[in-house]
Image (cartoon, rainbow, N blue to C red; front, side, top):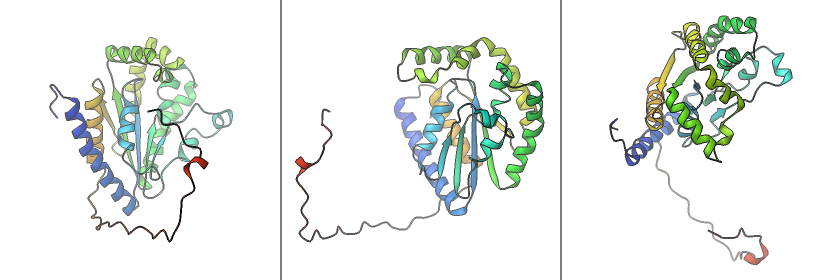
Length: 261
């Protein structure tokens, strides 16, 4: 798809091609017992959620899960930091998409003061070791950082405020983050310095154009998870069962949803 004048038709055609390839990839993951974790991090309103939706939409939800955790409970706050994330890791044949992840500690918790300096430095020290253990266990770990400009983020925030179906996306923390743009930039730079490792590198997605960001992210994901098409045998529908005189009960006995559309 051309970067200039990319139309809705071009976008939808390219997306359909990529989603078909995602289905091929999922079938390969299933049949070969692979375990895949994909992390989506980045600025608020950078396009993470939209990309996750386009990846998960064509896939079998039994084997592709989206994990978006709320703030930790009092009990979880006393656990080993990574503990509540470990319970969501994939079994063989599964792919898990984290809409934000353990990197909350290096981002929002650090900037907004939700964790102590000791907790932050412990995370930065232990995170590379934790991810190394994941990869050594056979998990394919892919990490995406969605970047967006200040101007585009502001435009999207205003759009969310004006759209009743998107207002839930604006949290008090999101609004406060506007006053900490530079602090988040510094936090991201430090996070990359410690956690951009050969075993689990970061990949940056330019999110200023949502459609191109989605296509680029999916295309890259397909390129970093080894897979190949596994032929599916011919599928034939069996003949319908003989009704043997069965008669359906009258429709007026059932509660029918009104057809107002």
